[in-house]
Image (cartoon, rainbow, N blue to C red):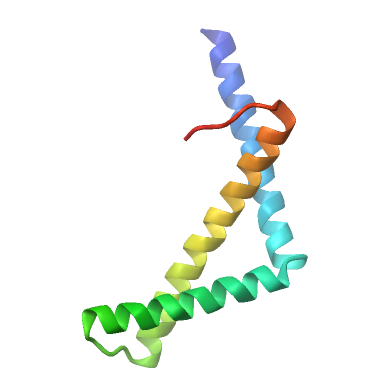
Length: 95
C-alpha cells in the first residue's frame, strides 16, 4: 500500500511540473497558439449569442471570453503534461 501512495505522489509532482512547463510555454513561446485560442473564444461567443438569440454587452462578452480562454489554456496545459508523461513512459494515460 505504501508503494501505491509513493507512486501517486510522484505522479502528482510530475504532472504539476509538466503543467507549469505547459503554462510557461504557452505564455512565452506559443504566441500563435494563444492568438488562435482567443480567436476561437470569439467565435464561440458569436455562436452562443446566435444560438441563445441574446445579445451580450462588451463586459459580458469579455467575461465569457475569459472563461473560455482560461478553460482552453488549462486544457492545453493538461494535454501538454499528459503528452510529456506518455512520451517518458511509452504508455497511454487515461483520465
